[in-house]
Length: 214
Image (cartoon, rainbow, N blue to C red; front, side, top):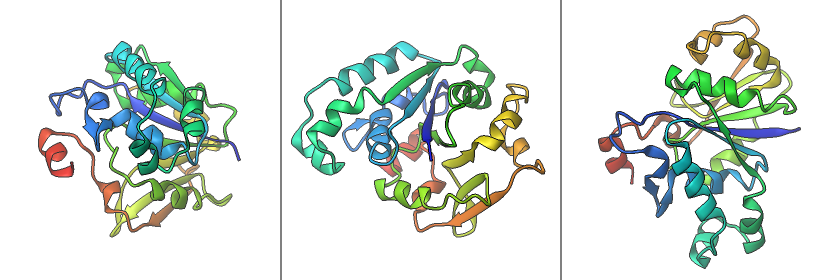
């Protein structure tokens, strides 16, 4: 299967009162933390940018071209050769209509993913999800479903896995729509995976969320 990650990093971060992609978690920017956790499982990682795109692109360039500390490689179970190849697997996509909301960024990202069987749809404000989650999550893929969603104690959470059969349905919607609206469509075949990762319920949306989650 050909699976890509689609990390949405285009919003204004108004509730956080700081620019979320560049806030740090465990010593690295959110955007880098997510990439390092995805990379062992997915070798095609798209970052959808919008607001302050230049700052995100500069941060990616600086981090992915620097010499990493051995402790950073150890923490993420990466070899130096893995680190050196990261920049070849991370691609930025600019959404000029980012002010229309997150759904428009999903649509923009999917327009680059037509060759992929699945997309892992990830928010920028979940850098705290453990690396091990992603391996187990990808194991939930089944031909019987086209929407796979983690749950914790019966509460639906994120990120999501979306099959290519849903891409046309998403792309034909208005850019101000939502995945909540898509989820009600008869073409959607959901698998809800009850997992042991409480972190999937939490977004770092506000300063209080960030302080309590660090």
